Image (cartoon, rainbow over all chains, first blue to last red; front, side, top):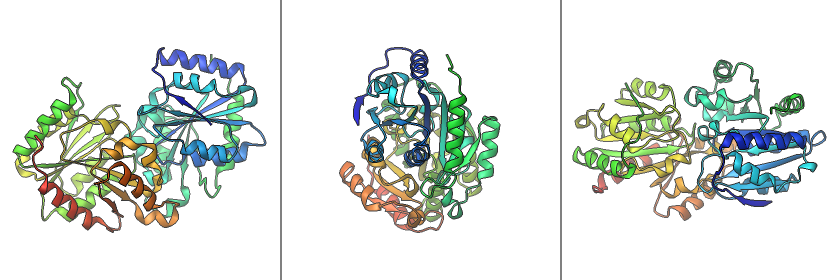
Length: 220
Length: 220
């Protein structure tokens, strides 16, 4: 694990994001930007996904946090190369932070780079990091009304992963409600229901992610 | 319910917050700013608190959301006067939005004004709204590591309310871990454990809130 301090953004984010994507394409690295609330279960989902994908893909991860390195330590424990970004207060990652973090990775040894963004359903929506796919993660415990309240993040995502589905019996969470809202906001985005701790639903998500990333053409 | 559009901030936030607080003090209205992640259970907690406090206090609420009026409709259903603010993308309320929203309320008919902020553990931390107390709400489903990851919001709060404690048996959530982190970040802030849907722990929180707000001296 290496710590990269967030630096002042000196270039326009979108231009830097395009440069990041060119670099990823040239290195044949597929990149997924994982967004969601604090505690949605992003890290646990990545742990489960990497376990599924390890025979097919060589993963690495960039962990974004306001402070601390708890998630990076979890990734180190499962043997996934990780770079920690501490934003020191900023509520989202940006393309410049990613460009700096990527310098710490050996891209020739990576096929699949996951970027775990800051826990935030708002700020992360507007910042392209240079990824090929963006996945929004929502836990059943957050409630089925979140797409109405935070439409932009759902609208701009390529898939919705509903996590902690094992808690649904204890909650008043209707998957069909958030699925209908997602269909309206992002008609082409599939919706997955997952319990990452139990492993339920992880395989179909891993297959979709693997196939979709493989089929993704360079965007620049 | 009335809709107040978020307007461009024209004055410095802290100055406006002080003006808000003066106005609240003059009207003998006590104000609490409720912050937390999307889906932490802020609205459900307020519903439970208002039910407890109704014989002692005349409540009103300002609901902050990026979009929609789901929470305001819930407040209308329980007969609590409510003003909805839609920030149209902004990730926190600010003092100017509150100043505008308060114009829609009859403060002579209100003792306790709750402001439900945008679901966000980052952006809301830096903006004084003119409140007397700030409460941070964290659900057990979010995990017990959130104070390490998002220290500013915990550090600046007057109490931590752990919600959805009924889910704890199904989760790997250690209340003592987040309580210890809170103790370190905000030594004087009490920690409450609540299940708002079941009603567990709401009465002690309501008592503390009522007593603490009554004892709060005008701050300006």
